[in-house]
Length: 65
Image (cartoon, rainbow, N blue to C red; front, side, top):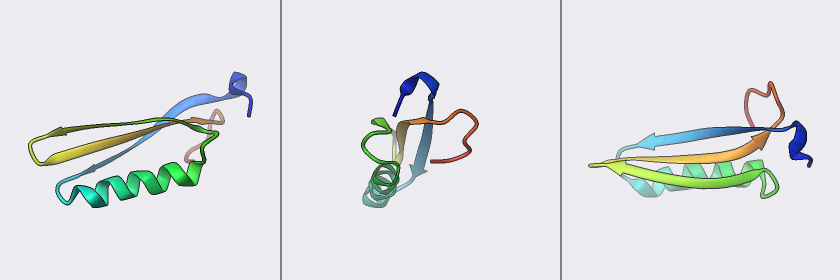
């Protein structure tokens, strides 16, 4: 994989409790795109709502991983 022709993309997962489902969905997506394309995973919350963002490399113009 050459990052010279790749762009950074993200997919976010947003949910109320249970957080286990939120994290499971995000980790399933991260596993699907593969270690070589994964940049990182970040998370945040406000009250009971959580957000997980999965950052990854993708081909320019691609619509999904």
